[in-house]
Each structure stands twice: as structure tokens, then as C-alpha cells.
Image 1 (tube, rainbow, N blue to C red):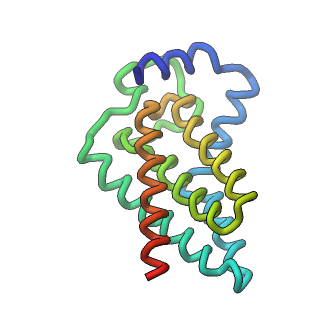
Image 2 (tube, rainbow, N blue to C red; image 1 turned 180 degrees about the vertical axis):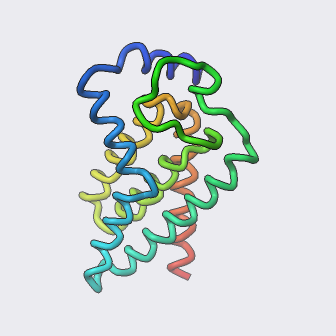
Length: 165
């Protein structure tokens, strides 16, 4: 199923617009940059400051766990298993599963949703776009992004639970 989906995306989704927008979305997810910026924004108000801390810790936890799980699972990236033309981004190292971009993006989107429903829905749209960009860019299988997304949501729920203790 993974291979069929990624093959379909590679054959039918590439054009000038998507070849521009998806590398940009992927870069926004590098190191959780866009989510860290939102955390700093939340940090300026006393009302949203607790969410800034929860967002930061969710990002950190989801990033660390995804990096621990990658060598344990040891799944090679799609472009390694199925060599094709040039990649639209720099060749990432390491393993494929789970997707760290997806994990951090969905962890952040979950916290943002709790902080503000309207912005949370936008955050989930952005998280989905970042996760999809990783499949589009041929650096993750769809299941890598799904597992990463679930990991991120679970990390956010754990941080929310610990915060309320």
C-alpha cells in the first residue's frame, strides 16, 4: 500500500507549483522552526505562556522519541530503496520511520488546538501539509508520516496530562 501511494504521488502530483510549495513546507518543518516561532509568540502573553511551554516540551519530546525510534525500526528511506531522479531537497540522512517532521508538526498542532481552536485547525492543516510534503519529496513513506503524526499527538497529550498534574 505504501509503495502504491507514494508511486501515485510521484507520478501525478508534480508540477511547477507543487515542486515549489512542498519543499517550502518541508523547510518550515525543519527543526520545528515554524512551531518554535509560534511557541515564542505564545510566550509573550501571560495567558498563553503555559501553552508556549507545553508546545516547546511537546516538540522536544516528539523530536527525541522519533530520533530514538528511527534506528530501532531501521526502515530505509524511499529514495534509497527505489532510486529515481533528483530529489527537490538535500538528501536527508538516517532512517525513514517515524517521520520527525510529522511528529513535531502534529505535536505542535495538538497543543495549538487546545490553546485556540481556530488557530489549531489552521495548525493541523499546516501539519498535514508538512507531513504530506515528506511523502511528495520522496523521503518518507505514507506510513512513516502516519506513525510520526500519531507519535506527535500522543506526545502532546502526555505533556498536557503532565502539565495538569
